[in-house]
Length: 177
Ligand SMILES: [Zn+2]
Image 1 (cartoon, rainbow, N blue to C red):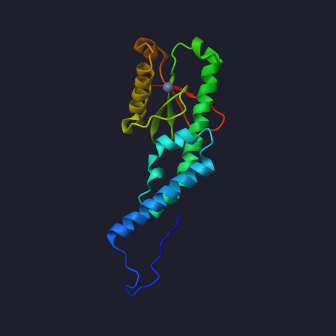
Image 2 (cartoon, rainbow, N blue to C red):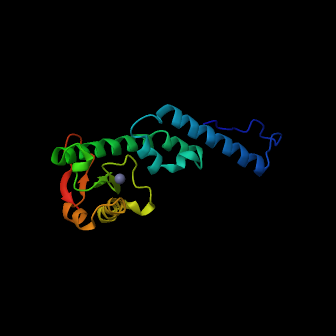
Image 3 (cartoon, helix red, strand yellow):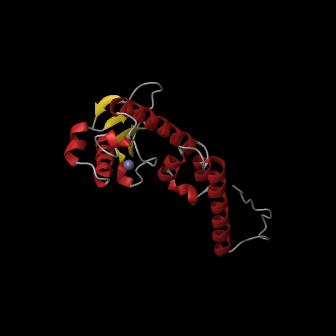
């Protein structure tokens, strides 16, 4: 991101607000394009895109810095957690989607202070604001997605929603919401 520093402290290069807004828009578009170009082909990019939509229009240089560093790591972690949960699910029900008891198995990713509702079939994470929060909230939203996609609500309830945490190598916790 291009950081504009005043070059003349005596007022020689003052810009109007409109010019400032225009410059910010140009920088935001360039930032989003750079993010997409450098990491957009990764399987975890759908997680990033839906968890951090602000990357399209970062409000400040500080936000852009976080979106280009910690946010990327968080999205990578979320994807790795989702993949571990998916392995466990496929170990139980097989790889063939048509043999699954529900087409869009709900899961909660624990990140670890906030839960994120997700799906073991779709690659994005729940982007509704209320898809995040405590375990119950995230679980309810993940379940809602499953039912909207055609699953029988009673079967979803019976299966429970597995919670997967960030610990490397551990299967999803047996805690279900
Ligand atoms: Zn889904």
